Amino acid sequence: MTAVEPATKKKRISKKNKSAWRKTDIQDVEQFLEDQRQEERVGTFADKQDEDLFVVDTSLQKTKATVLSVKQKRKLNAKKPMRSHQALENTSKVQDPIAKRNHVRQKKNGRNIELEVCNPTKPRHRQANSDRAQYYVKLEQRLTDKKNKKLAVEKDIWQEVDFRDEIPGLKDEKGWISRDLALHTAGNIGKKVVKTHASLHHKTTKAKKFELPHPGMSYNPAPEDHQALIEQVVEREEGIIKKEQHLKRVTTSMFSKVTPEERDRRRLKEMSQGMEEGEEEGSDLDEDVPTNGEKKEDDDEKPYHTINAPVENKKKSKQARRNELKQKELSRQTELKRKLKQQTADLIRIKSIRHELDDEEEDLNDLKKRRKQRAEKAKFEPKRLGRHKFEEPDLDLNLPEDIAGNLRNVKTESSLLKDRFHTLQRNNMLPTTKLVSRKKSKVKRFERNSHKEPGVSYNDLKERRRAAAAAAKAAANIKI
Image (cartoon, rainbow, N blue to C red; front, side, top):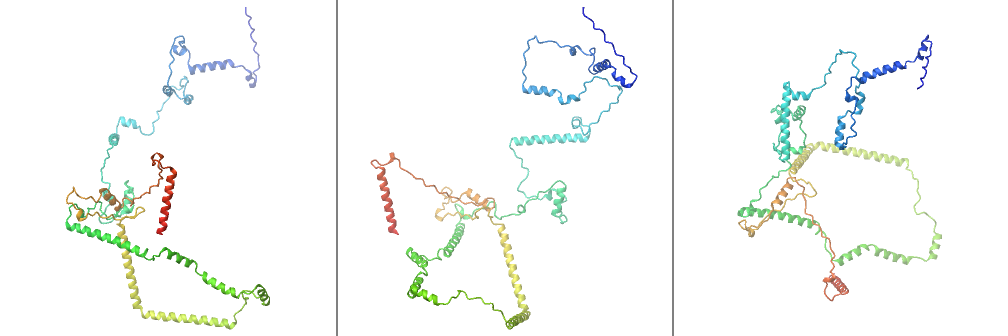
């Protein structure tokens, strides 16, 4: 038999004062209340189903473990609630003490675009749906064109269009609306005009995009046209020859030519200039030079004196200063009289001075006019876009004996590609370039032993080269 422990006797404590109530054991009451609250939160066993209370043991069954991929694991984790939000979930099953609570549904801020698209109720919703459909149609067409590499050219990009023609009310025939005001208005109504450089609004060259060749260049030209072309080419060549002769006259012909012997003699004479005179003077001095003993005695007898004379403080006297002041006053009076006389003479010749000023002003206006014309002419000439200046190419000319009269036997003198290239340079579209010729590097060549003459050794060839070099040197000395 098991021994039964005697029941512990409860202490009887006086509860006269409030401080004695803390000594009362209320553990059983707190445990009962905690169990009751737990049942309210989780629920009682009577309320739960069998599946929540019991688990079927399937450990004895042989099940094949399925290995999930990383992608499948991510999908499963995405379906689960986030751990950071688990603390916000209400897991309590305690009923609301206020059964008839007025639940107010909060209104969602903003527009429900999805509801407007699916169930349009207003005219603006239907208009938005139609605009959206047109946008997607254009988008599909644009993507199709891009895929097929078809570019839609709707306007001429080279056409000069005034922005005031597209916006009504901005172009006033009477000139009340200025261009600046039109630009300001266009920017405020959402059609801002991008400012471009002034050179885009005026022509920079008078050269034509395609210039017809001279009639004399035809394969069967008229005699007059061919003769006019020949005269034009001759005139141009004469100008080039005249320019070359001028440069030769002012450079090479200005200097005289002398032989090498004369050149050396002149150089020797120039470099020895003054040496002969010094030698002659030195010989004369040598004749009068005394001996060392005589020179010492003469130096002892002569008194000592410095090379430079002593400086004396010579002050001007009062009379000299008075005379100087009188002279200055006299010169000032003379200059004053001269200016008065000049003014009187100028008053007499006022008409002639006026004519001189008019002539000078006229010359100045002519100079300004010529400069303005020159600047206006330079606007339409080929610009210097690169290092070299543009020069008109030579005219293609067939001499009378080269004219065949038919295309089969014609002698070609031009190239379409070169002609178009020069046209682009003339129209300031390409910089002028020149053909650059590179010098080929000198390569030393040696003869292989297998390709040499039979019976000739390396030393024999070396002796031959030496003899040839000596003969060439001797021939050069003889010519000099």
